[in-house]
Structures are given as C-alpha cells and as structure tokens.
Length: 61
Image (cartoon, rainbow, N blue to C red; front, side, top):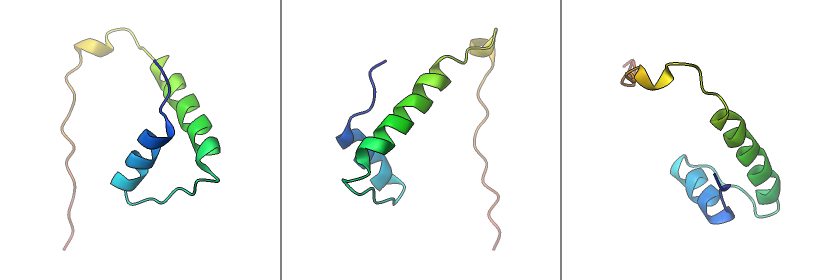
C-alpha cells in the first residue's frame, strides 16, 4: 500500500477541521504513514468473518 501524499493528508485534515502547516507536513506524513503500515499488519484470524458494528453517537442535550 503506497503512503498518503501531502494533498491527501491536507484533505483529511480539512475534513476534521485541522490545519496542518506546510512546515509540519513531512513529519505528519511520516507518522501517519507509519501508523497506517502498522495497522495494515494487524490481521487477527477470522477478522473478515465479523460483521462491523454501526457507530452510535450518544447525543446529550
């Protein structure tokens, strides 16, 4: 899996209302791509047979 590029990282950050400075993008890219690579290597036996659960947010008024 190729790593995320700078444009993709900026788009992801914008989607969650984060502003990443251009001076920090190399460090962020390195850290984020390392995390994605580590997560990709996690493959417990039988994981693909488990149905995902929906995300339920508990909204408090």
